Image (cartoon, rainbow, N blue to C red):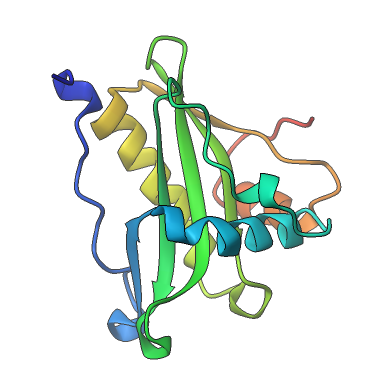
Length: 152
């Protein structure tokens, strides 16, 4: 049995604002290809199967996708948070949002989701993230949210 800290917490159903247009749901294997495309585009690289691959089974993590209900639930964004340092640290591995939907607050909603999941699902006391210095969009998002930036 899982410890209480590692139990699945419910994913908030809707993104605040947007009249219920966008909703979160847990990642499913069928999302692998679109997740790979979103992540590759966010890094300005060609899409590959590796970008959509989930972490190793022993890695404690949660991945959420962001769906557009006006487009029959099409995936338009995603985020993954990984527990590190004995679950004391929630590491935001990635946030990605479709190009045409940036600036709508969806990336912010995904970052906030990761903070909540880190606390409630892992019992994390600290959250961290890193960003490629060349990823200007991600840098602006994290700076706007007031998070310290690391580089890779």
